[in-house]
Image 1 (cartoon, each protein chain N blue to C red):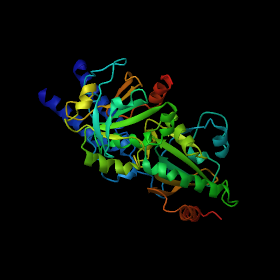
Image 2 (image 1 turned 90 degrees about the horizontal axis):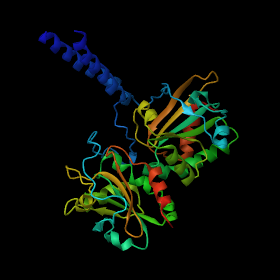
Image 3 (image 1 turned 60 degrees about the vertical axis):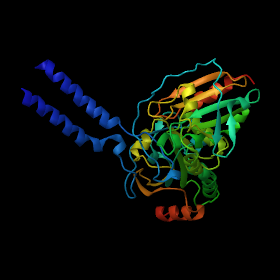
Length: 202
Length: 192
């Protein structure tokens, strides 16, 4: 009888713990009003990386919201590149990620780096979403078609068709120097990203 | 025995339903006339911030312990576009208070950076030359206690000489005007 009551007690403890610790843990800007779709807590990661630090980054060419076409290889020999994959437009954590990077241009400039924001959304969706963020200094690229092909080439395309929340630093030689595939439910550490940029040779 | 086991699971399900509203994330935003939820902030390491709040030493403090009549609390995030846009106006609000003999020392401002690390909080402070103290709330602990409000969110708290307090303003969104916002706070607090 004593043994049988143990699972029940564990269950009670778990329920109490979940009730008191649960929460969306997401500070959301009023800029988006009530237009953010909250998918709830998701599986932290759902893909297998296809690249490692030290590998040459897979090249890609994507259309930007601004209308330009951006190729990763066009930065070779000129700029370090930070790729910021975010899962989807109009979702909680993503909507409060790029606006933070938008006030960091000075820091990126110090490390001779540019940022490229990428999602699997189409251009009209990205246009209306990023308009809420103010004027972004970095290109926002659509990896919509072939769907998520660029995310897949890095190994950050999830099974439901969105990308992971992932950061890659690619140096001027086109070599991947830093990878952070973050728990999709959380914003990546800014400090870790900037420290990684600091390690790049000028 | 089977019936007894089923009863236990029904009780567990009931427990979950009953406890859910009391979860940390179930808190409501502070209401006017009410109290702030009980939380502590770290005494700032920066001398100017410490002097502004008239705090000394290390450790933690509670907002009603601040030696002032009104504290304006800004709930913000460096990742929030509206908060970024509001930063210059808040600096102006600070300058107006500090430049007014009647108000200086009687109204103070502090910011709580929801979901921001210490590093991110410092970046925002430096980027916008914020002259008042900012406190990181990296794990959203305070944010949950404050009802997970969207940002920016303003709370003004009247602090009495006996350190009792009450919320006199609690509202989502940017200030509609610096002068009118300040006049409203002064009026609500009864500062003369």
